[in-house]
Length: 406
Image 1 (cartoon, rainbow, N blue to C red):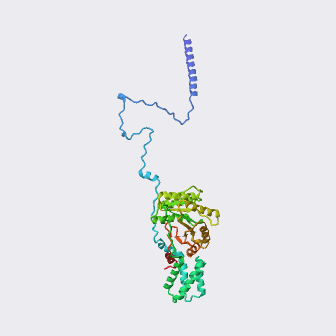
Image 2 (image 1 turned 90 degrees about the horizontal axis):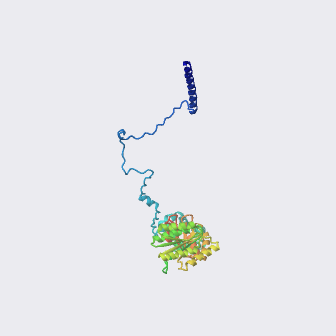
Image 3 (image 1 turned 90 degrees about the vertical axis):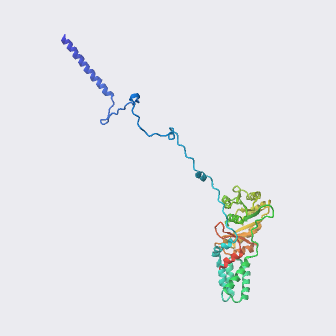
């Protein structure tokens, strides 16, 4: 009996051992393989807050005021822009300039004119100072005048007068020669001609001035500078940008006007220039200004259609009021070639005055005499540089003084 019980116990123990091995192997298969060098990470459950007697002592932390606390996600309010920044964003009004007074302007610019022009006067004085004035010398004097673009007929007249006066004078000191030459040149240029730019109307409408000329003579710039001359003399001005073929011309004229506080009337690009000129005169009359300056498009004197259009601009403007002044702008450096242009313009519109630009460059002073003789109208204004106030009323005495020097 005891043997049987022992056998049963041994069998149970054996069965238990076999079962343990099976269970252990199963557990080992279910575990994921781990790297030999890795250490398992144990994540502790979140700690629960302690209450009552188990609560921890409160830690001292810096405290913030209610003004310093912001809501989550709320952006900090932006500081209001400074008044200076707001002022910078607004477009600044153009500063109104005060043009240089026109009285004596050519005298102030005399040195600039003399630098390029006094070769004529010095050449004549040198020739007249020779001890014997023979025919060869008089021919040299004549050539000097012709080279200076004086023109054939005026040159012959001046030489004849000089010969007569030198013969009567006899002995010739440098001072006497300078005085003699000055008197004859002033007479030749024409001291008694009316050179005032007519800007006053007999009616209750503004004075109307048209500015005409070929391409590249500086009409738009001259119109802007003329506005400065008039403003300097206390006149109020409206500018008419009737050069509609170039948008840049209207922009340029408007800039000139803004600098002296003059209003500019302009139309659409490639629009009817006569319509713009008409509107400029109309607005000028409504505003009660003194003068309306009309800048026309540059045109070649050989283009019949464009020249006819220029005549149309003048006719349309005169439906409101007569044009008081038509200024022809000529580039003085073109010399005798400019006379052909002048002649054609005079046939289309009634030229009343001449503006010679670039007279301080390579121009020859005799062109003043030649163009006056060709058109029968006086030179009224001359351009002596690129500056805003370098357009000056023409003064014969100051001009001749620049020619012959001191």
